[in-house]
Length: 447
Ligand SMILES: Cc1cc2nc3c(=O)[nH]c(=O)nc-3n(C[C@H](O)[C@H](O)[C@H](O)COP(=O)(O)OP(=O)(O)OC[C@H]3O[C@@H](n4cnc5c(N)ncnc54)[C@H](O)[C@@H]3O)c2cc1C
Image (cartoon, rainbow, N blue to C red; front, side):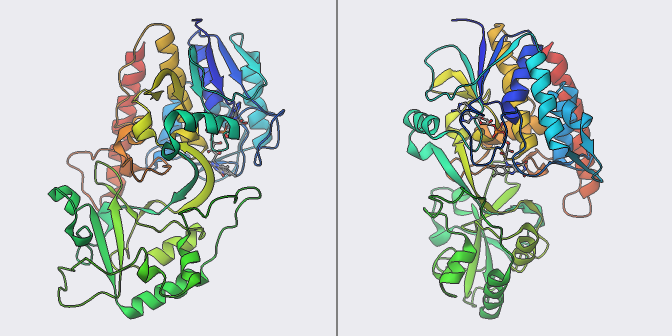
């Protein structure tokens, strides 16, 4: 076995992984299929092409989880962040970049590195030996997707996401919502209380349906739609099929008793299911949607109990190839059944340019250490990078796993800080201070 690291996919994650590994002295080959084989979203043959928006989102590293991820990546010598900073455009508190200059800059820096070589070929199978990182992204080629499915089983690789909105638990009004699973199902108390329920009377339900039908929707990108209707109908499409459809589907008011008003039968009930082991996040069951983000927040805050909901992420449906990482990957992003293969980027079930690059950064460092015969300490779950990798490789519910953005709901609480709206600024500062100290220590321990 040679000591060369092969990276499949030269997108955000693959480019960062290559940079990190080469900076650690490892020989790297990037296997990127573009421009010979394209995708419906990429337009060039450049590495790290931004397929849609030109924003890395908030750059606030004290009050925002993605800003904190920027900070951690910069501290780790990230090429993606270096090029984003070099080609920054004015955008208030957000980090927006000149997309062409950015990806050309990444490509040039990688190609100038004496340890990095690029091969232009589509990889269509999972190799039996060597050191590999697969970072083929949401638009992983069909042939490779089939090969991954053959290894993991059909249930463990999705080709579309169907994301229901995710709400911070501490923003749900428990004087209206209550814990109960339908028909009190479950062996343990924990299972019987895994759901939160929000009741609606007839007038509230009718107003909600009106708002759903009127809300502005996002169109699919060209080439994105084939096959998405299997089992993930957007709620607004269900509502279009008939005003009662939701009441017989995800909002059916059966098998549940409202302890706040046990004698009143609800007309409809919205259920939220626990989304992470920490119990800080809940997803709204069956509420995948193509409504625009602003409209979603307005419509979902009409649900009794969610009037002040803060959303860790809003819903969506996209073409998106991703693994059921909680069951397939270990904490070092290795495929459990073939540990010489790591996955990185959006295909691991994170979402977004920054999160994908961060998983590339981590995979590159872990692979480089392994090739050198070293092992790194686990990344602290109190850092943004650690919170994300902990979530995708074990913290998230495997059965309902959907891609995730970085957000403070993934972080373990900081002791002694107030919950709720009032303490939010202090709490976020507490998270980011702790993360910076722990990330700095982790980078130091790595040597
Ligand atoms: C239509 C669309 C719009 C999006 N808009 C946004 C947005 O606005 N903001 C945002 O943050 N995120 C957006 N995303 C998500 C975005 O794709 C990711 O955030 C980011 O690009 C993921 O990085 P990655 O490295 O995992 O994948 P990518 O950047 O997609 O890189 C994967 C690379 O692998 C290559 N590849 C695939 N299969 C093979 C193979 N078999 N052999 C060799 N090479 C292969 C591809 O050509 C590609 O270069 C969007 C995704 C899509 C599909």
